[in-house]
Structure formats: C-alpha cells, structure tokens
Image (cartoon, rainbow, N blue to C red; front, side, top):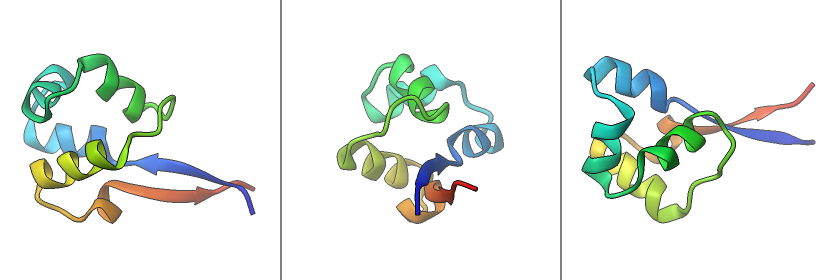
Length: 70
C-alpha cells in the first residue's frame, strides 16, 4: 500500500490567522520550509514536526497523517 504524507498546517494557520512567515519565525525555520511542508514537496524532520505540534498545542498525529493512494 502506497501512502502520501498529508498535513493540516494551512488549516491550522488559517484558524490562528497567521502567515507562513509568522509560523516560521515562531518555530525557527524559514518561510520556504513552511511552504514546502504545507504543499507536500518536503517531508519535515521529527524536530520540525514536534515544534509544530508544540506551537499548535496538538498531537503530531493531528497535524500529519497518511493518505492512502487509490
């Protein structure tokens, strides 16, 4: 079974009304990193995933999930 790593970062940012740059600054990465993770072009390290989890105050599993390919 092939799976794609999906995420809810854009939705979470929207709820908090913050930009990619604001999120990047808050967790210590570049805006480009946030952009490429959001669009699925880059799979984040465990450290980045944990920083996002801490920032949004939710478990990593609510930010990232596997979407099965059809």
